[in-house]
Image (cartoon, rainbow, N blue to C red):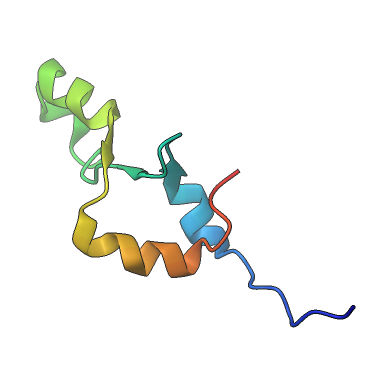
Length: 70
């Protein structure tokens, strides 16, 4: 039985977002590499963590990643 065309995953979003086991999206913070030498070690460590995406942005990212991130 034929089905309609598949949705394509947005490759830029695939590289930037990660999906947790419970279905939440995570992303890395910005400002990570610019002027890195003058930032304190504590700040640089905080940039290494992935943070949960805001609920207001979830719907927009869900359209870009219809099947989740593998």
